[in-house]
Image 1 (cartoon, rainbow, N blue to C red):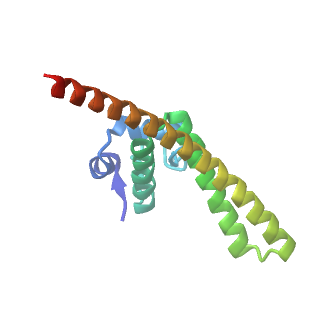
Image 2: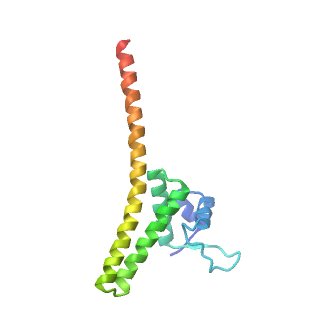
Image 3: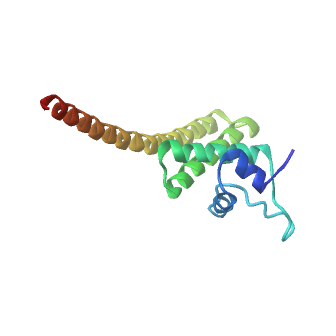
Amino acid sequence: MTFRIGEVAEQVGVTTRTIRYYEELGLLDRGDERAKGAHRHYTQADVDRLSELVRMKELLGLSLDELVTLAEAEQERAALRNQWHHENPSDAERIAIIDRALDVARRQLELVETRRRALEEFAGEIEQRIASLTRRRREL
């Protein structure tokens, strides 16, 4: 089953312009094999990928550059999984695959941790505001 861009936008909760922009950034397959002027058809895998990208962007408050970085890391991890399962690597090659996968996962974690620290800092500021307002209220 395939979907047209408007259907995908409605399912995921974004605009068609957002979908096209994500394609321009390389976050989604552009479907370059389609004939010029032909409608782009999206697979369920495309819908799932877009949903995950939107979820990561919203959940982590990522800029588009950060989202691209995170998505590229996910693609690299997928390529490593494919290499592991389909290329029958030797034990030494498997160790190299694991080492690369660890590097990718650490880069992803660093981005998430940076966002988490920023959120914790913001939460602390709000907690201080609440405490200050609570003190003021008690004084009255």
